[in-house]
Image 1: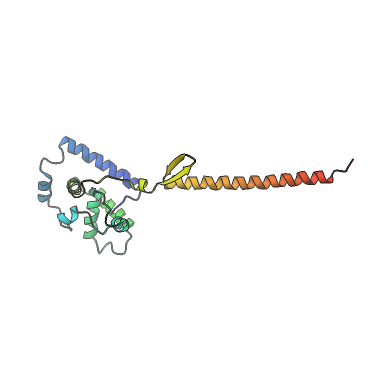
Image 2: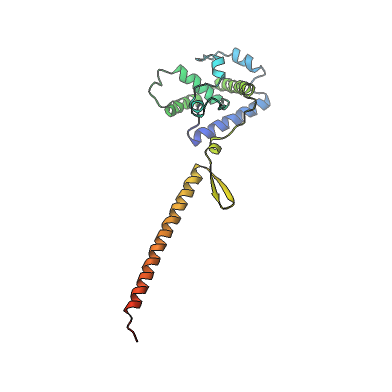
Length: 202
C-alpha cells in the first residue's frame, strides 16, 4: 500500500483533502450520485472500477502483518497511483516503488480538475465500501504502532522512534560522563595517596 515518503507529499495530500471536503460541503463537485459520476466519466481506466475500489490483498503491509490485519481505506492518491502503475507497467519496469510514486505524484499535480474530482469521488466510494467490509475498523497510525515503552520506577513512558533514539543517546552520554568521572576520581585518589606517602615522618 502506498505510504507518503516525504513531508511535502503528506502536506499536499492533506491540502487536497481539505479542498475536496470544502467542495463537497458547498456542493461544488457534482449533484449526481457517486456512481453516476463514475459511469458518465470518459476517463480511460486501466483497472476496472471493482478491482480498483477493493483494497489489494497482496500489499506489503497485509503480507507482513498477516491475514487478520485490516488495511486502511484507500485515499484518492492510492487509487490514482494503482491505476497509473498498471497503465504504465512497462515504463516503470525496474524502478523502485518510491521512484514510481514520485513520478506518479508529478502526474497527479498536472492532472485536470475533472480528473482529480473523479478520483476524489472514487476515494469516497472506496471509503464506503471499506466501512461495509470492515465495520469495526479503527485507524491506528504507524507512528503509534512503532512506539516503545520505557519504565522508570513507577512511571512508564511511551517513546516513538525519534524519541527512542534521543533516549539511547542520552543514556550513552550519561554512561560516558560517569566513566570519565570515575577515572578522574581514581586519578585524584592516586595523587592524594602519592603525596601523603612522600611526606617525612616527624
